[in-house]
Each structure stands twice: as C-alpha cells, then as structure tokens.
Length: 354
Image 1 (cartoon, rainbow, N blue to C red):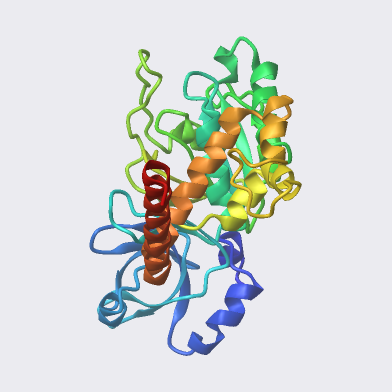
Image 2 (tube, rainbow, N blue to C red):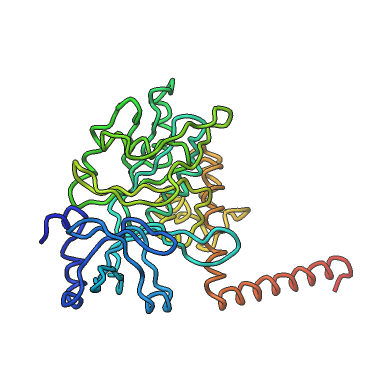
C-alpha cells in the first residue's frame, strides 16, 4: 500500500472497491469541491480534476472526503469517473423548504463537535449535532474551546456530561494551547476527523494550532452576541504533517436532520429507557396513566427541556420521512382526517345528544 495514500486514509475497504478500476485509473481523495472542478489528493500530490459528463448526467457529484477513480488524458487533464463506496458520511436535509439530502463530508472516523465556553454553549444544539453524527455511525468528541476565558470550566463540563455521558469531552484553548495534547489520540495516521460547529467557535484557530502555523485565516467574533463571521467559506480536507487528516468545515446556520432513528436513540438513551417502561406501548407521554416519562420529569430524573428537545427532533425527522415517502404522507393525512371526523361526531353527541 502506498504510504501517501495510507496517510490520506486509504485502507483495505477502499482497495477492495477500487480493484475493478485498477486498469486505466488511479485513486484519489477529494480535498475540496469548487463550482466547476474539484481538488484531489493523489499519491503524487494535489491536482485539479473535473467530473465526467456521465457522472454529471447521473447527478453523481463527489463530496469532500470521497475516494474516487480518475484518469489523465494526454493534455494532462484529470477526470473523475467513479465515486467509490463510502465507509461513512455526515449529511443533513437541504436548507430551506426543499426535501433532499446534502452530503457534508464522507469517510469520517471521528467528528469534533466544537463549541465555545461562552454564550455559544447551547445544549440543544449539541444534542442536534450528536444525533446527526451518531446517525451516521461516526464517533463524536466534544471540544469546549476558549477555556482560558471561562470562569467555571468544571461546571460547564458537568452540564455537557449530563446530555452526553458516554462522549469524550475536552476543554481546550486553541489560542493558548491548553488541553491540546489529548487530541493527538484521534489524529492518527490514516484516520479522518471532521470539525463541526458554529462560526466563531475557533475551528480555524484549532487547525492552525495543530499545524503549528497560520494555515487557516481567522477572524474575531462579535462581542455583543459572541457570534463569528464565516472565516472558512468552503470545506477542505487537510493532511496534517504530524499525522491524520482533518476536514475544516464552514459554520452551519442550519443542521436539519435527514435521518434520525439510530442517532436519536443513542443521543437520548435515558428517554428511550423511560419510554420503554410506560404502561402502554403506544404512550404519547401526554395524559396517559402509567407514563414513566411524565413521572421521571415530576421526580426530577429527566429535564423537561431535554424531553422537549427530543420531541422537536422526533417531529422534524418524521416530517422529513413523510416528504421522502409519499405513502406515509397520505396515510398521515388519512389518520388526521379520520380523527377530525371522530371529533365532529363527539361534538355532535355533546350538543344534540345523538
């Protein structure tokens, strides 16, 4: 196995899937996707490549992190012909009203979910990121940046542990180099890490600290609301000199769920456990007798805002599923129409006794 490809994350999974293209093509990994072309890491270096006409016709466009099969013509132009099967991906619903999947990055081992120890620290946002990452079978790691300006770091770590008990949590300061050493555990040769988080949390600063130079441009956050400007404007795969691959990602204003079943189960195991103990298997956790969710909230074992967050994400995921599945949408409309007729009959009986 070529040492450069191995550093980029090439392994037996990709080698096996590339075997049928070995004659006439070479493997490469997408480092950046531009409007009209892509940047691709090859064993000989980074090149610019275009997507083949057939791939464009079939709507098959690579994402950052993809392994692809390329050819090179006599003029030196590289063309991407095949996207190899993905080991993992992180995706979200397209922003806005459109119902489609937007693949953010692919072939990821670890996701650094990064937030700041200031007003950006938002438990509900962390739950959303955790659900997305876990849905795609990627290992989450939470980074609490700017620990040097936080008066009570341990208390904030405790707050985050309450919603992410089994997730590694690291308090760091990318600017001061505090708490950086443990991150080398995840940045091993052949492993790929993606940075996820809002603008201004310090993602670009972290990459500069890991590289030991000013590779990524950084900008100040606004002091009035602790929000940052988009420093990173495009996703970029970076091969770190000290080992490992990291993907810098622009701050995302929206992170809507595309799929969520597995992700929600593993982000809210406490709620899933309480729900399994309810008296009725179809309990809606509203007014039903024997509801263990309501009991847990009353007993102080479950936060009501956490349960509301879970419900919001469940509703969001179900709405997307309905749009993806027309039959499910029709069945849902029929159900509510039937319930409407039943409600009318009940009102009629109450008002007229019939």
